[in-house]
Each structure stands twice: as structure tokens, then as C-alpha cells.
Image (cartoon, rainbow, N blue to C red; front, side, top):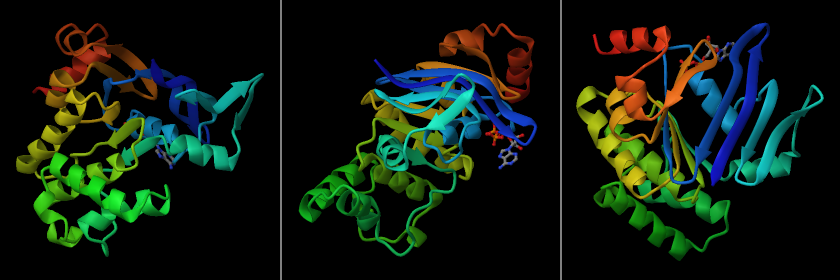
Length: 252
Ligand code: ADP
């Protein structure tokens, strides 16, 4: 079953196409990694899924709902309240965590379920504690973000996104702002989510994650999907010169 379908996505900034006819499908339970050189359009693609960026043309379907479509050259988004409803099926993890600095970890995680979803405080807190266990930070429930390491902050951000029970988790270079020695703790949590069949779309520079964890890998360059396939196909049998060159540079 397809959770996300993007068809012929074009995203222009003035005359420059950051995305130039991208097709992408993510199925339920899949972990899809998006790799490619800097500036190839990876983050833009991810940000278009939950309308942080608006596409110029194409169509995006999340679950059974069409977020935006292009018919006879006319591109239109659904109404604003419907956009919010559809985008609430996604959870986003940013490079720079974006936690609420004045809230404890427990409150960071339970705040949106209580205020946005109307879940009772007791249940939201019980759920937040389970998520703290999942990310290995149960002992930090009363800590504030400023008291955590970067890796711990990112694990709290993951727990916070999961608390809204999204159908797809979007990761925008989740480990890029972290010191090399703590990248592993975040990747371990993401591997756990993969094993739990949480659907994930991950923009990453971590080739080990793409190679060992992802079910499917998309290689982008200059706003286009140049190659896609299983990790073994992408990393061990690249077809295009552009992907071969990219892998040579990455593994140099
Ligand atoms: P990646 O994530 O692969 O590094 P991005 O999606 O961030 O690439 O960017 C793709 C291209 O779009 C880049 O050339 C970038 O400079 C351009 N771009 C991104 N955001 C904007 C913007 N707000 N205005 C103009 N150009 C942008």
C-alpha cells in the first residue's frame, strides 16, 4: 500500500528548477533513503511533502488524500484546513532539532498530542514515557533541551514526532549537525523504527544507513531522480556515470 505518491514534481525558484520532474513512491513500512550531492533538491523534495515548500506543478497524494494536483496545467492545493489534516499524517525531523527550549522533554513530547489532538493529559504522558523508553532517554524526562547533547536532543525530537502517530516520518539530514561520535546513537534509534516497520523517508549523507537499513534508495542530482533501487543495486551496481562518480567521491 502506498503511503506517499509524488508525480512529476516541479519546484521552481524564479527560473531555476530545484525539482525537475520528480516521481517518488513510498509504501507502508518502507524506509526510503534519498541521497545525492549538496544542492540536488533532496531537502526541497522532503519539504514539499508536508507543504513547508509549495510545488510549482505535479501531484502529491498522502495516504488516500490528494494534497495538490495539476490538471490541464493548473496546479491547486486542497483547502487550508484539509492541508493541515493531510500534513498531520507526517512527522518531520530537522537537522537542528527544533525542540521547545522552555519545556521539559516530557512536555516537548506530550504537548502537541494534548493541545492539537485533544488526548487526555494522563494518556499523553504515559505515551510520552513509552516513547522516552523507545529512544533510550527515560531518565531525561524532566531535563530541558539545553541540558542535553545534540544526539539526545535529536532522539527527543524523534520521540516528539512519533507522539503524533504519523503515517510517515520525514527526516531531513537528522545527523548532519551532530559530532561523528554521537551520530550512531541517532541511527540506532532510526534502525529500531525501521525494524518496527515505521514508514520513513530519510534525506541522509550517512551512506552506511542508506546501504544497511533502507529498503529503497533514491539518488538525486540537479533536481532529478537519476537512479533508484535497492541498496545493493545502488551501491554495488550503479548504472549512471553520475552515481558512480558520486560514490567514488563519497568513499574516497
Ligand atoms: P539538497 O537538500 O540536496 O542539498 P536543496 O533541496 O536544499 O538541496 O536545494 C536544491 C536547490 O534549490 C539548491 O540549488 C538551492 O540553492 C535551491 N534553493 C533551495 N531553497 C531555495 C530558496 N528558498 N530560494 C532559492 N533557491 C533555493
